[in-house]
Image (cartoon, rainbow, N blue to C red; front, side, top):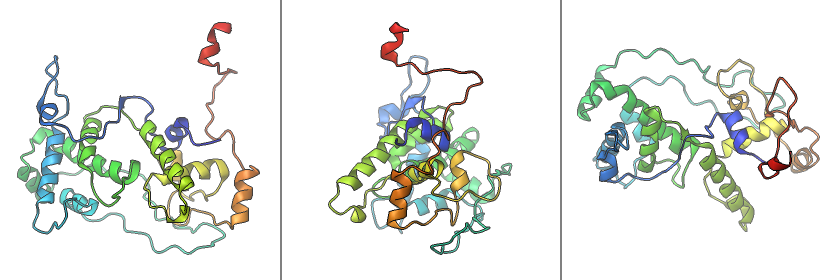
Length: 283
């Protein structure tokens, strides 16, 4: 029993279909080239993300070759902070706190661009018709670096994500479940084979694994309020994890007394059975 592509799709909503995830900084030819139908290989928004990254990388207050996620967010977001960090959590709580400090999932209608935002678009020479797409691509690049596929430098934005972020902002479906699952197993293998597992600094999206444990093994409290979104949100927020001693944790996992085997099972109105592709001719 282990986390699967279907679990990532059901718990998190990551697509299992679509174009392959290809994290690479595009060449000039790929960035400006078109196919036989005169359609661009990469949407226009990608070049604006690269331009913004170049400006930040060469800014007077940037003392390293990387651009931090904090600087990336402050560069693009000119609005006031809507959600503040939760207070420090206290361990060994028997029940979940009433306040999880979770956003409700409601996305307000976008208001008119502010003067500061219009100045940013003008600085980057972004056409009026591309403002929303570029803005969304900038957010998706941050989302990929921080939440979906964190890299070794977890506090920096990776320009290699701009191509995929631009494709997604343009409406292309990108298969994220496969690279995320590969990253999870690579991280688990690194920890398992390390001579000192507690000292391993390998970064991988372990929060998806926590969601899987919460769903199958009931290791987290469910939230009090109704949240829109995927199943993962039911176990999110401050104070969600239950605390176990080492013996209790092993008992819960190895004896499988609390396992919810069918929590992500496919549901059909009528009985059905799965058939292995190699045995299809025998039926």
